[in-house]
Length: 287
Image 1 (cartoon, rainbow, N blue to C red):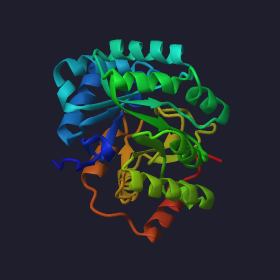
Image 2: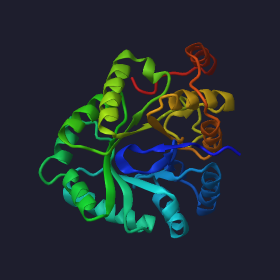
Image 3: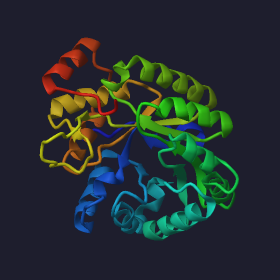
Image 4: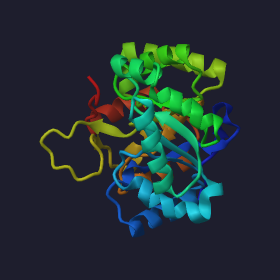
């Protein structure tokens, strides 16, 4: 079985697998199911985990892994709180749930609202705690994440105010056909390359909104499920040589994404992707 390749994760010094495990897929999983996922991650060489306190049971499911495998994983979590006290309390709860005394990366979750950003980055805000946590060795690095069309533009603005180590935002073929988003994304990428900031991406295999269809996957968007289609979508994102891809938030589709990432060699041609959009009926998840 092919192992997913690794790449320097920005300025952190860690060689992270280019596919990062998105633990939102464990939000409703049992521990037995989670342990099966762990075996899959080890098989594919995944050495980086992304989690968050709002991902249901995810942190609790990862906790038992850390007893035996802490040194094998770069561990990242998040906070969606905006004030110092609430951020501190939530983070210490995360450490307890994860059964660790520190994480490698602590991120401000979905920092794309101007008002929330002013609170988080202002006096007595969440950022004050992130800096304190880093200074105390409770986290090694700090970052920001975001959803929606405004994410790259907002991240670029935030980086002017604080030197975050990492950013996280959506990236898939259809989304990057939006000229405004693509322009903002390119500007953010240029800045991150210059300052050695790691770029993580999400929503690689999003098909579109569920609409009236039954929700048969653990994702807020409808995912693509065909293996060959997933392969092209994953390879397209990994064709951006400076980015990392966070895996799908669904256990059913996770093996397909990992297989696709392990077989990556080059980005599919634009003609292939245009054809795929029609064949799979892809639609924007952000409007």
